[in-house]
Image 1: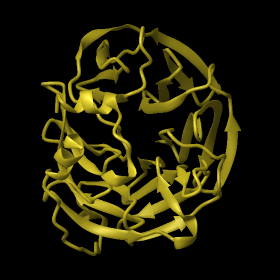
Image 2 (image 1 turned 90 degrees about the vertical axis):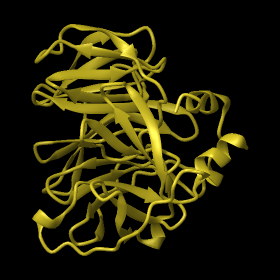
Image 3 (image 1 turned 45 degrees about the vertical axis):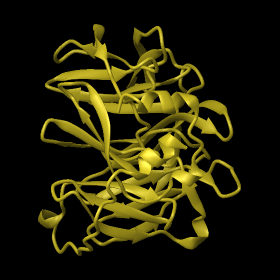
Length: 300
């Protein structure tokens, strides 16, 4: 209960409703779905305010654990999640923060805990979980022009909490149960094993100053060489880790993102410290805060 109260003591973000008339007016932003209101919240990074709310169709019955990725301009792609009846879903949405609209796309295979990634007019997604706890290896790509899913080569092993990042026109994939970092080549539809880590590398990927970094489940951070992903070494341990549940925004030498408790979190890349800085809504009642998350947040 003490930790739950601590989350609520974070400042609640102010709202400043806006309508964007041009791409140039769209703020540097994050987007996530509010469980309380069933709306997508658009967060203005520079002003530290919720600048727009986009309602979702009531019929979707969305709850949580769907994941977002940034497309071109004002659009984001939302995939999967868990329904009110505790089932994984394959819902696929196109969110446009310029028009404040949500468009339902062709439904994909049901999954949660899988981060999609955008590359050259396609969205790729690897593995994920069939609720409650069944890691999957199946992988897919979505053609944004044709509004159509297509199956691609399965992951080498079933995995959940999959994370992805584009690097030199290929896609790096990590996840719980994967052990290795895998390099997916869209042209060859095949995987190459890059680096084996003692603990599953399933927390997050990021690129900073021409180097690629991955955070493992033991909070150790590993880095590649500059402009190369063939050789990786231990970098440093990360403090205050959180679940990443939104697109990620880079601003003033920190990464900003929503976590799964609807908090805005900042990741200081110099200190390797992740810290929640604000709440967007009172969603904590939907989550059971286990011992691991309690221990992790003592560092925040």
